[in-house]
Length: 109
Length: 116
Image 1 (cartoon, rainbow over the protein chains, first blue to last red):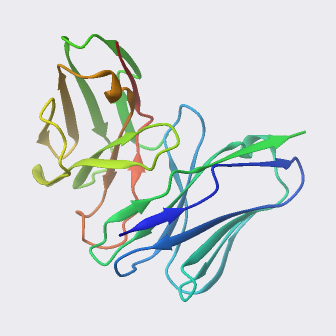
Image 2 (image 1 turned 45 degrees about the vertical axis):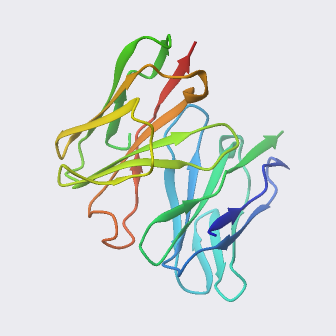
């Protein structure tokens, strides 16, 4: 079956760095998405990886290892506004998204 | 502002009521989606419309009835719901249709539905 695993909740300190991991099992693979969802708001696109390696976008970076079925989202210089849920989604060979349950990130001062 | 709006934002209904959720996208996209989001569970894809034609129905109970009059509007008609249907219902859109590639999904803020 197809599956996405990510931690349910993480806590980090303002100004620090946090890494949110995601492992995936999909029938074929057409990339890995990360979305951010603040409480009561729409999920918004953060990143898309289809090739191995690290993609950096400002304070956020996303990494992919296709051989390991593994991705992570790295958030640097954490700010209180980064408190949100982070959704990992893998795209299978039919371009269907397989979603994880999301990781709730709590930032403490 | 993601360009996808949903109304109402909150809805409380009894099991015998009939109500409708509305979604509108202002992005000129061709495909629209309904998702159910329950606490601590992955997003569940319910329905997909591509150029107003329904292309996917993921074994959703008939008490949920979608309608897509044009590429910009999507409705979800609800009747005789159960308490376990309480969830956040998200609408999304993509430029291309499903299976057309790796289009980013643009989501609306959702309707928080409570069934009593």
